[in-house]
Length: 86
Image 1: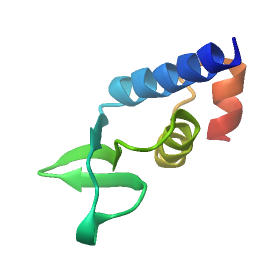
Image 2: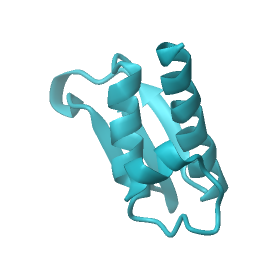
Image 3: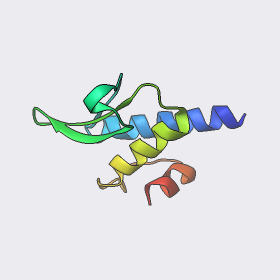
Image 4: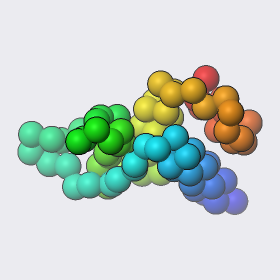
């Protein structure tokens, strides 16, 4: 059950990003781009790009760190996800 709850929270964060107009993508990162990922602007579009090898909790942390920069108060998210964003 705990794994399901964590996956549900990741899905909530991904949905919130979409609602904020932030595209989320999971890419292979190696060489010079190696790292966990983060928020960036690509051709005028806000994006969170992260290493596809990250485990779910790490993906949640990268997304929460990125989305914390946006005003998310007008969007409903679960209390657990709201705590990640504060």
